Image (cartoon, rainbow, N blue to C red; front, side):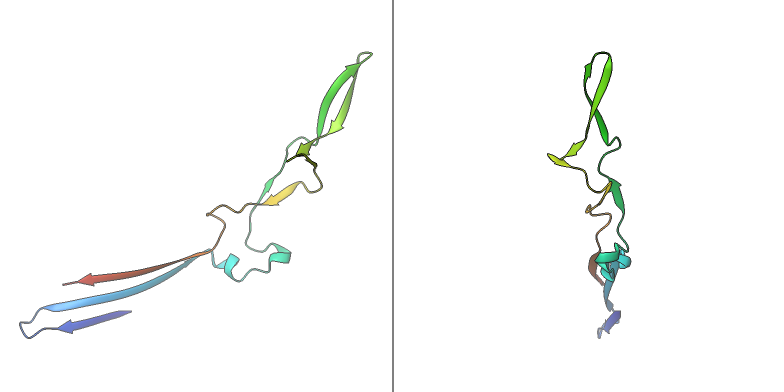
Amino acid sequence: QDFYLQTAGGTKHDLEFSMDIFNLGNLIANKAKNFGYSQNTTITNPLAMKNVVDQAPTFTWSEYNKKLVTSPFQIDNSTSNLWYMQIGLRYSF
């Protein structure tokens, strides 16, 4: 939105307001359906070799944050996936 003021000397002063919304999908998202969110893999290998007994390897389930992995994906909460708003004000003379 632009506003301006003309002075008696003929100088024009402009005031411009702006608002931008980034990642609008996340703003209107239904979080239960994960709309607008990107997901990263928690682990790439669900099995980890524990040791070798009689020349046969034994495996165990991998852990993530000291818990067994129950879901292969997690929501990425970095700033590139969150919605945010930018408000601007510009004065020109």
